[in-house]
Image (cartoon, rainbow, N blue to C red; front, side, top):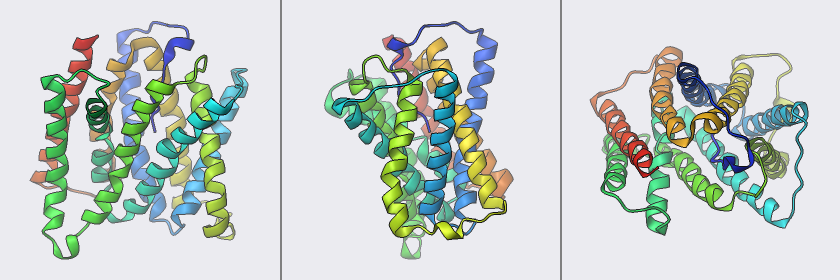
Length: 309
């Protein structure tokens, strides 16, 4: 999970281009791996709310430990609490819950493809709210994103009972929430906060929000004391999330947002690759056509942002 951040409160640094490219590849590969791990955990026998609760607790502990080691803390007020509540719901609670419920029913590669639509959602929201300049490239990026969705959904709609289309529609909440969160965070970023402070606060608030749901619907007794595939999947998801987030923040700080946005390309193909390796998935012509169309949409969005700068 990535977070849109404002680096005005953090010192600028520089990094050599080969190092930046290597970190970008690692970041994209880890983000794609996270979707595969969600699917693996969801198929491990635990309820979705159990997995969500455990993942959030582990993420909160990890980010809090990093903040402690870096000797950072943050004060909250009414405005910052509102910011954390909204970003926690949009960045963790809804998208992770939707991904966990949809994961057992759709391939990991398709789940990653759908998740990579977040930049397209951000563009559509920005254009609708007129917070961004309406350029031909951005309109074409939006059209390509819609075509990619149609290429994936259409074959499922023609199947009896709509096939996996309902679960794909549920998975669309992932990019929808990430896209809305990026616009919201860019506008309402708390003044003086670093990215680490924001992501730590976001995960802690998300954990608190999910706790009563877990108490009502979860089954803490069922959490195994021995490690199985599901536990390892959750652990890998958390570790990948922490490392991916730290790399994301570092690259934003040293290279800027345009360069980091190209990590979406890597994560798209990484997610499909992880699905092939871990689940033996294969995809038809329409899915690969959707991948190519989405790549075109992401390229249009990235190059348009670069030109704007």
